[in-house]
Structure formats: C-alpha cells, structure tokens
Image (cartoon, rainbow over the protein chains, first blue to last red):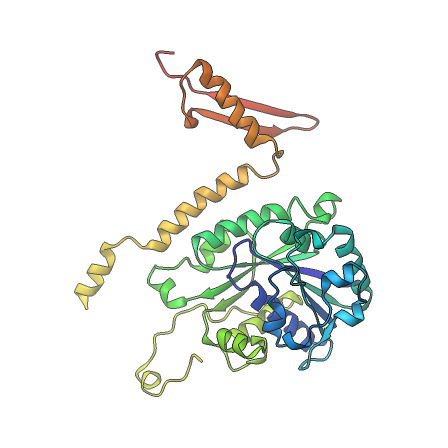
Length: 272
Length: 84
C-alpha cells in the first residue's frame, strides 16, 4: 500500500510543483518507489520541472478515460530509478477529472508504489479538492507572506473536512508545513514573518524550511529537480525535508542569518 | 552606526504587523470552519430581515452555530441602537 501525499497551498506561485518534484526525487533517491502526479489539468508544468516534457505521450486524463493504460502514460525518470511521472492533460475541459477515475488510478498505483505524490493545482476548486481527497498526508507549501499564510489556513480547513479520511471519520490527514522562499536576513531585520510566527498562526508541524535560493530557478531552467543539486542550500533543505517525511529527526538548517565575514565577502562562497 | 540603529527602531517592524493581522483573520476563518454551507446565506438574509425593522449595521449582529452532543444551537445576537 502506497502512502499518498498531496503537495498543496491554495495560493499559486509559492513552489508547489518545485516542492512536489524535489520531494518525489528525494524519496526515490532514498530507495522508495515513487510516482508524482500532476493534477493541474489544463496547465501542466510538472513535466517541465522534471525535465521530461518531450516524452509526454499520454496523460492522467487519457488514463481516466480509458484511452491509455497507466504503464503507457507514466514516464520513467531518466536520472533516478524507481521514479515515475504522470503528467496532467492540456485539455481545457474542467470536468475531465472524475472522482471515481482518480480513485481507480490511485488504487492501481497503490499496489505498485511506496509513495504517490499529488501535485495540486492552485486554488480551492475541483482540481485542488481531487488532488487532496484521497491523501494520507499533506505538505502545505507556504511563503512567509500574508496572502500565502491565509490561503494555507483555508487549505487546512479543507483538509480537515473535504477529504476521504475526514468523510469516513478515519484518522485525519497528517498535515505538514513546508515554508519556502525564506529569507533569514529579512527576517532578522523584521521585514519578513519568521518561521515560528507562521508555525504558530497555522498551528501545524514544520516539515521543512527552504531558503530563497538561486538554485531553484537554475534547477527549473534545466529541468532537473533541485534535490539533485546537493551543493545548494535549497537542495540540501529538500533532502532534510524528505528525511523528516520518512520519520527521521533532522535539525533545521538555513534559518539563521549569518553575517558575511570579510573573507567570504571578498572571495564569495558560502551561499550558492 | 548608532544613528542608523535609531532610525531603524523608529519604524514599526512590518513582520509584526503581518503577524497581528494574520492572527485576527485566521481566527475568523477558523470560527467559520465546519459550519454548513448555507450559513453565509442565512446570515445575509437574517440581516436583511432585521434591517427591515431596525437600522443596524453588520457589526451589530453576531451569529454563531454551536454543536452540542445531539443538536446544534444557532445563536443570534443583535445589538439594537438606543432609539430603537
């Protein structure tokens, strides 16, 4: 039985797809058979971030509508064994995803995989609700910024009411907070919410903290999930996040502002 | 350097303003969590009915739904102006 994890946020542009790709890659690198599914029907992008956009033949909607089998639609990652991508469709038909269809796909995948990562679209519409409905755990991606925090709270409300676990009165979906685009220097000067504040306002556990990093754009430019860039702060922070998802106790890094010394100012280094 | 620190202290830190605002809005959002989908509409229509008789504004009305063991209690609190 696979564990189903939805990566969600409410607000767009906070790093859902980047995080879904990075976490899926990290889980597979640790030897877990993992599939990452793009639920953003009409606006697929996970394939670009994973660097497999030219290998898309069939997609999630084709599978649901019986036009292709799962094995035809899933794309095997070129870099990591045990990692597969199920792309979203580019159709403009909003009702292309059905609840029964999604359930069947997840059930079929559950037999073969250890982890199923659902990359949710932004918003709280149908696509986002379907992405979270069957989840066992949720990674709520939040930026240290008011609208993102507020939207994350709305998503937490949906997770506790509009999921299969909630409706069947089973154990609730396990919620994790992932803070991205964190800027320790701005936090130090009081111009950015600090992680403790965000955690307190949303009152959920912190699973990871990804610093604002040049490595993220570099990774998406190249179509290589940032987890592969282990020299970068963001890459290491995602690796830590994956370890915590696997139940390990890993200390937090990259949350403190270190004033640059004269030497590193002259020679660069440190942050990459 | 001292002067710089002094100038910095003058400005209220924007992050603490953000925190205060978020705490209020999130508390409000959470109070509405789990309530039936018809609540906002019910609230709006109740307000319209009351306004047909008394001129009160939005803040004077407080509606809440509390769940007890086997029933729910809809509580409606209206603060009427003095002149009635």
